[in-house]
Structure formats: C-alpha cells, structure tokens
Length: 534
Ligand code: GLN
Image 1 (cartoon, rainbow, N blue to C red):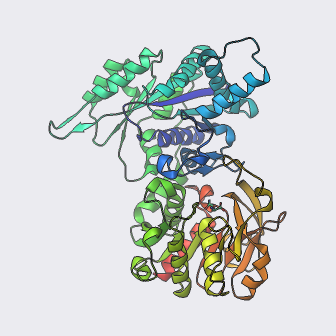
Image 2 (image 1 turned 90 degrees about the horizontal axis):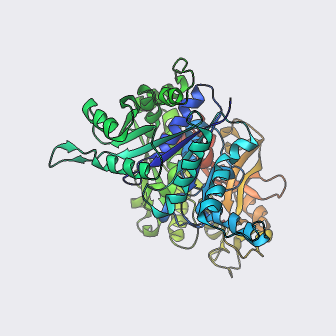
Image 3 (image 1 turned 45 degrees about the horizontal axis):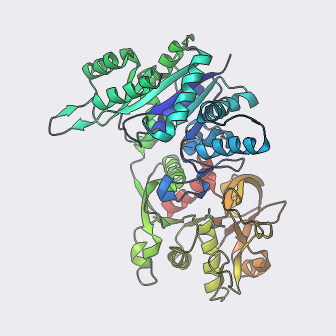
C-alpha cells in the first residue's frame, strides 16, 4: 500500500493535546495492523529542543538514536511502543540550517533563496523523508503551534501543496480546536472553532475532520452547527472531552470511529474494529488501582512537563503494581539539613531527578543522605545518580569537598568528572553523550534481578559528566557498588548500595523507554520496593 499522510493542526489555543490525539490515531491505526510512524514539526528557530530550558518547552525527550526532541515524541512512543528517530522531530531552525548550508555550498547557485519555494520544499522533503527510508502505511505529522502563528505559515503552505500533489486518498488534515464553556451564559461557544477553520480555509486547507476539545459534553446540535459552518460532515466532528487519563483517549476516539472515518475518507476498506485488548486491560487495572503510594519527586522544576517521562513511567509502574502513584513534587532548592525529614515525611520513596547546573543540587545531596541513612527507597536518575555519588563521597568516604566538575571545576575530589572526549567541545547543542548505549549488568545485583536477570541492556543517555573511575575501588570497598558498566568504554552506568532496601542510581534515563504495554523494569521494581516500605 502507498504511504498515506495525516496532518494534525491546531487552532484557537495551544496545549489542546495535539500530541495525545496524534499518538491516539497512531495507536488505533497500528491496532488495525498498519505500519505507522508519527513525527512532529515545530515552528521555532532552535535547531533542536536540546538547548531549551524546561520552563520554555517542558522535558527534552531523547530518541534511541541520540537526538534531543520535543516531549510529544515521548507520548508517541508510550502509546505505540515504537521507537522514533531523529527524523521524527524537525524544527524551523533545522529546516533553515539545511537550506542555508546548501546555499553556502553553492547548490542553488544563481537563485534567490525564498521561503516559498525553498523553505516549503525542504519542509515537504522532511515530511516525506521517513517513508523513503522504510515503508510506512501511514505517516502522521503533527504541526506544533496554533493556526495564525506567523512562524507556522510555511508549514501550512507545505501541507497545502502536499495535499494537492498526493490527492485526497493519500493526504488528509485533522484540525484540533477548542470549544470553551462560558459559565455566566451557561453555554458552549463554537465561534473560536469557526474562526480558526476559516483561517485554515483562507490558507487553502479544508480540514477533513475536526476534533473539538471541550470540558463539557457537546450535544448533537453543537456538532451539527460546527459541521454546517465548517464544511465537515457531522460524523467527522469528533469531541475530545477531558478524561481522567490521557490513556483513555484512544478508546474514546475509537468509540467515535475516528480511525474508521479517516480510512473511509481516504477511500480505504474499513474492516472490523480492533479490540485493543491489552490496552483496555491496562485501563481496567489502572481504574481498579485506587490504593495510593506517595513518591517524592526531588527536583528543581516546579512544572509537571519538566519531568513528564518520569511521571508517566511511575504511573505505568504503579498500575502494574496495582497502586496509584501519587507523585509529590519536593523542591530541592528548599530542602535543608534541618527540614529534610519533614519535607520527605509520608513518602514511601523518592526519585532524585535529572538536571543541569548548580541550582537545587545541595538539596538533592541532602535528600540522598537522608534516604541513605533512613533506608528509604531512592532512585537517582542521571544528575540524581551523580548526587548520590557525591553524597557518598562526602559523607562515607570523608571527602567533604567532593563534587562534580560541572558544579566546581576546581574540586580536588571530582568524583563526577567530564569525559575526556567532551573536554574540547565548545558547542552546546547536540554534543552531549546522547542516545542508547549498551550496559552490562552485574550478576546477582538488585538491578540485574529487576531486569529479569538480563546480562546486557540498552538505555538512553543525555549527559556530559560521568562517574570518575579513579574512585571506583574506594566506592566499592565502602559499600556503593557499580552494577552496570558500558562494555566498550568501561564507564559506570549504574550504582547500587546492596545493603539498603532500594538505593539505585542510573547514569542513563530509563524513563524514556517505559511504555503503556511495557512498563520499565527498574520503575516496576522501584515502585514495588516503595509499596513494601509503606
Ligand atoms: N548535568 C549532568 C551531566 O551533564 C546530568 C545531566 C542529566 O541529568 N540529564 O552530566
């Protein structure tokens, strides 16, 4: 079958959940046996989201092939279980960069380089790129931002052209909008949707389906009105009401035949509706798991999106352990020696979060000391693992000035140090240790058991600093063991204190690879330990 393209645009406001809708459509088509991929095009000028502060754009998600991407790719992977790549995340910066590089090389010699056609052509090339490398039945493309944004215009133009070139059986547009409820009038308002569809039509795109985000149920009258004003059939006006979990969205979309309508519109034979058995089982189990387990999230970003994948991984592991994980944010900047007991009170365990820079690290170190000395399950991820190591060096090995050279270049006890091959790097973007690397597990360790006694695993990284192997023997002889090592570089990837209930730190980010149907083994084991500790 020839590759078909689905474009997802958004109107009225941002944060409507285009990523979740894209992931849900992917999930539903996949359940019908189609090979799919989902990609995101972001209209900002950063070449990738790697250099963005999480306050700007939430977590930076890393693909297995080592590309720093938008957090929506995390949703795509968690929903569909398939791995995305560097070709699934494209920004305006990246588009311009490649056009400008080509211009400098002389590829367009003599020509004036313009947004149309050069930038739009490059956008089109990128949209089609994934399917030139591998066969896909459907390529779902989510366009970041909102219709009407100046920077989004070249993307809309590229879609318009592609729809024309590919024809209606191979290209389709789904527009996501918002239907606000005015409490004072007691009414749901469709005008913003109408306006946003008009804007899209003005740019030459007639949406094929509309997905209306709403906090209240939309009755048939409202859907009819929207259909009427927007030139869309009523059955193609889908409502996406707030649900208790994002993972209910695919089922809710299926109930309204979203996937079947897409296929019908593309002239395809619509077979029987897939059962979504394992997915429904997950939802059922999630609903039944009402008993709570409190887990402290020790970090510096008081913002859900900054730790998106960690929160989702904990939620997955909670469900499969028949518990509801209540993730309690604990601001590491506010943790002191005096108040740490109070701040961590009621927690069955803590996660010490990843991060960069000085802010909030002393609080993470104090938390690591408290949980080590009180035997509270502790999961340190990347910077979190590094803080566990520094704490151990300071308080057990007796190096009061131990630090990471990231925080103190002159520390005489650089137990966390910059890798040799990082020392000459001057550029910030895309130059860390990124992507999936192999890791050998030490037989008999808790980690090895958690991974189902596998000897070789692969996990994704995003960091510049590493455990300093010069100190390895000292750590090991004092009780902190290296239980995971990179077979090629001998870098320490996992530390563990076997004498404690659950005290494990990973240099990699396991949270990037937990999915709804395959929760991550370390999160599973950690949550289990937290429950036992309750
Ligand atoms: N800042 C640390 C490093 O670069 C940890 C990075 C992280 O937590 N992702 O090594």
